[in-house]
Amino acid sequence: MKQENRMGVAPVPGLILSMSVPIMISMIVQSMYNIVDSIFVARISEGALTAASLAYSAQMLQIAVAVGTGVGANALVSRRLGAKQQDAANEAAATGLVLTVLSSLVFVIWGLVGSRVFIAMFTDDPQILADGTAYLQICQIYATGIFLATFFQRMLQATGRTVSSMFAQMAGALANLILDPIMIFGYFGCPAMGVAGAAVATVIGQWLAALAGFLLHVLTNRELSIRLSGLRLRAENVKAIYRVGAPTILTQAFGSIMIALMNLVLMAFSSTAVAFFGVYFKLQNFLFMPLNGLGQGALPVVGYNLGAKKLARIEETCRTTIRFGLVLALLGAAVFMLLPGPLLSAFSASEAMKEMGIPALRTICVSFLPASVTMMIGYAISGMGNGMVNMLATAIRQCVVLVPLAWLLGRLGGVSAMWFAFWVSEACALAFALRQLRRQLSQVRERIRRTEA
Image 1 (tube, rainbow, N blue to C red):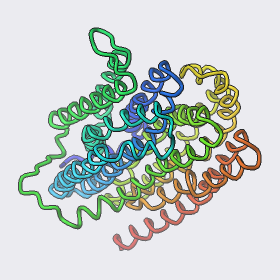
Image 2: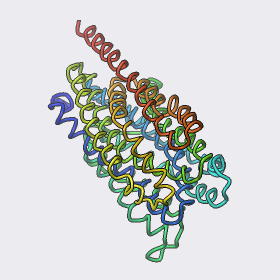
Image 3: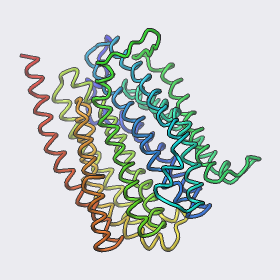
Image 4: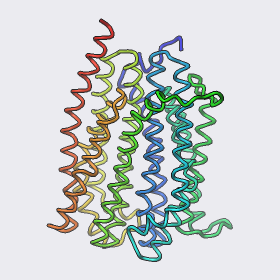
């Protein structure tokens, strides 16, 4: 701690890339869990794909709580490291670990008693209900694995060790990729478990990622020492973690809520529409996960420089991440615009799904550009200790405007008209985020001026 951390002195564009690229790769790998599951499950039947799609909204809620708790701990730890408060940073990390484990138990209980009830909210088809329940129950009962994996990855990121975080995530995803076909279809003496096999492969991968993250933290993360012995859960630490973490949880949860509500709207048209939307969201995650990785890479940089009172570096970090985000969004939109058919074919899409999905992908992808700017602003402001902006912007993007407008357009123009709701919701969220960024930077500037006076 005697030498300045590179987050306070390295050139910002190169620093953001070095921090973000490993996280982006890690997030792409994370999105592969559900993409790979869906690709193999789709080979069973479209009904099996629909079952996995219905379970996905509950899985996203699980990930939301894990990521939110980890991001809150990350932001607090990085700020305390920037302020050279070593013992306080260690205590914050230990508190984050306890909160992570406690949070995971909620989903374990849900898995035991509520999985079938959740799937039954969307379908009465007996096969879809059985497959969806089996898949969701396994993922929830063993949820502690994804929580621990996420926590240790965020602790590695908080000290700038994003490459180690990437390797931990890749260990789990590689295991999932190998085990999926073996457990779904029954190779090498393993019984064919169908949809349940995809869930078993997923949780094994998550627990391996947790183990890898823990080992890499112990072996490489010298700036943090997590000790639970003698730990007191101080209210100030819990509040500080959830001041950023709770809005982040809600922010991530809006995706889960949006999928659940859109599934209800789409089920009125057909189960094929639900299956398509599940495929779309996982394809979209393949782009948005790297965007989230870019934002998460910038978050500790902003937090560190806020603690170090370096306003110019905070502002440059904001500008840099927005530019990089727009480049990623343009690339993603180009792929969706030019290759919608091959993207859907990877999921064994029927002709009916392609007829619906190809124009839908081309319509929705236009909204990626404003979405990328909104996301980068949300992460930057979270790094300044305010997670509310990210939460509210995401609420506008994914629920408040999107779902009611999609329902209305669907009623007026059919399923093909629904997708234009993405354009309107993203434009509204961008206008809100830009205004909040100017306000937040002004507040930070005034805070630093007062402390230096």
